[in-house]
Length: 554
Image 1 (cartoon, helix red, strand yellow):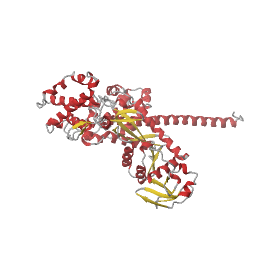
Image 2 (cartoon, one colour; image 1 turned 90 degrees about the horizontal axis):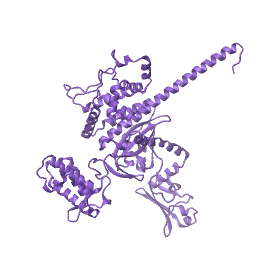
Image 3 (cartoon, one colour; image 1 turned 120 degrees about the vertical axis):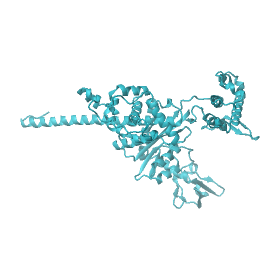
Image 4 (cartoon, one colour; image 1 turned 135 degrees about the horizontal axis):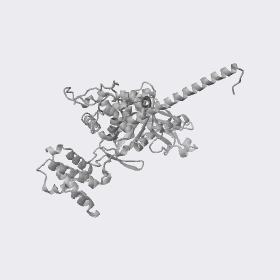
């Protein structure tokens, strides 16, 4: 199938709009469909998706890409299934008006159109490492931000855990699933090297016998037997054609994560506490990882949301999806890399988990100010910000009480200063001072990072800082909306790439709904203002007329 642009977007003489009554046409023109069709639909860059089609122009041309993409946005906006979205395009003139298909003799969708379109995008992403949906959504976000006059001088970020739809498995179930999955793959390919002893795994009752119908006292033996089968299969099929299959790769990954080499160079089971959180949780979703956040367990992913905002509007300009073990600080580093150097000063509001002193310095070099609402980490003993420190010469000049140190030095980011014993022992702040008592003097040892943190904490107590960080709370509603309205924790797909694709359309839908809501709000405000102006004009005419006749208006 070759790529071609959608050239049938203009109203024709036999357009279905022509049969509407004046009242119906007026109603349609005042609906969401007009703004979507006039503003959002033209934003869709069809050429971006030419890469998923054949470059053989002699083959059959594709159906309109912008119609598919726009319909997937509408599907998320109105919380529909694929079938419901397709039916809406077939029978609802608002959908046809929004997607500029009112002139089509037949709507260009069929039962599998949307799933095939998503599948083609997924395959391209997997093969080339390019997320076309993310590129398109960020392009739309930039255009919407420009229309809403959201300049991008203030940004805020938030992350959320997103559960995978795969089942939570026990350790034995994970090992068993990998072993049986490989055996089924070998049987499917009619491999004659599979020993007779493994044929039992092909019996549907075998899993229940091994996992559920054995005594709990036999749990250790069952684990040992299952991993022994896995090790035997790995060695037996190493270097064969079956070793190139996904089932074999999952088997070898599981073995590397669940076992370790002992002193006899044999592999044995790892203690449960030593299994890494990014280990295989379920062969059905190899990308999912394990994490506990806020006291809640999650097997799946972590999403990061980046939003630009002003006093009236906000736009999600970027998003990302990673395995659950990916840290917030890693997201900060990624975002700084994407933004690059800023011509004008930019503020990024984050919570404490996103912040690190090294990241703040990196941001500063890019003309970006990283503003955390809190600091994560152990509370320091005493207040290092009370010491007078010259950061250019790296000298501690005096303590809070004005006492100069006897001597000092700075090495590898660490300040050391020595204070006279008589000064410190007679100081009223000694109990809370972070100095350490030595035999003949008192020593202050502090890292530059601790000094910076202390200064930041002092700044965080100011009214201006609190007023600024309070604005970060606005983005915390996005994870709530994604859960309540868009059911993000129950995606009908598994895997990082597929889940990211679905997240992209949901983020795009949120931006479109915000824009359409703003347009509707502004139209209402304009109508109220027009009515108010008309009322004032009528009043002035009435006042002038009756004033000429000698009457005084009330």
